[in-house]
Amino acid sequence: ISLLCDSQVVVGIVNKGRSASFGLNVLARRLMGCLLLSGSRLRATYIPTDLNPADGHSRGTRTKPRFDTEPLPRLLPP
Image (cartoon, rainbow, N blue to C red; front, side, top):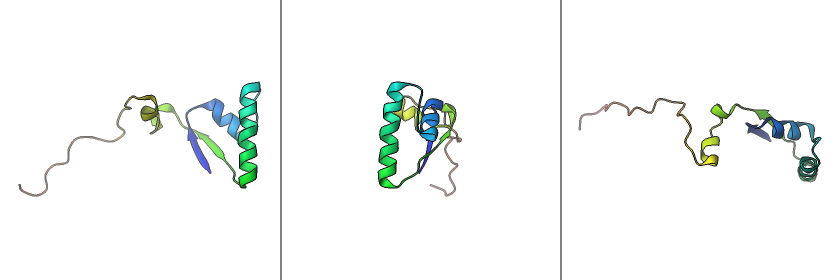
């Protein structure tokens, strides 16, 4: 399973399977246990916030459109 994430902390925890923080280490152990039981592998990749398509929706804001949003010209007469 591949995960795109804009948090370098989460990417580090997922890829290493551990953390120096006690609280995060508890969560990492739970995650690794679920992955072990399911036979899955998880790989996290860092993506900058500006390129994360889910970021604006999860924060309740809109991100800059990555594509031109101008309406297309009419190809057929009305």
